Length: 217
Image (tube, rainbow, N blue to C red; front, side, top):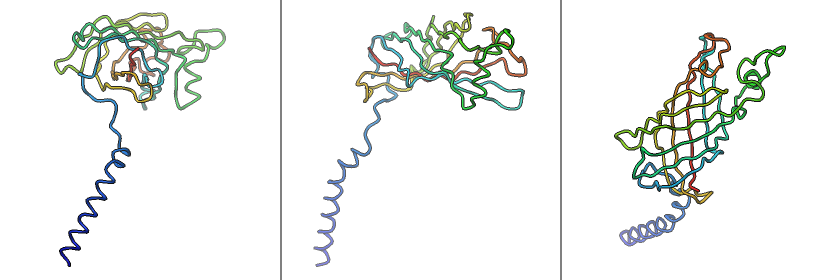
């Protein structure tokens, strides 16, 4: 009797596990994007502005850093996985999309100059920052690259290099289109772009932390 009861209990447990497996799979769906370059297909991609951000960070008076983000990035990526070094990137970011937790800091960065003078930083009607690549130097791992290009901001154009890495590719479950993700970092000097207020008390170097999703069109 004990053996029969044990076998019956085991059978019930196995049946319960089998029945719950589809429910567990539904509760834990596969992640759409994967770090797999074979998923990248050739073509022209456009930024997903809702999921592309550029973070910035500067030091304030030597006490601590403060930071914020720019959003609403728009632009294109042309890429062929058979020749990734020929990729082209052209992305524009409205400075006015500036987002910070402190309303006082945002006002300071975008307010007009006092008594008709020059603004401290960008002013109330800043232009658009635009990055255009000139060369893509792919790393030996095939997932990283140094992207050389020009950044135009505040009416000034300067060369910069973005250290980028591929972060995932797959089909976006919401838009149903092929999507590629990248992250990147670079450091610029704001004085190179005519933004020199409070130097050197507020650091000249600005760290940029970039995350961009591109959707195939």
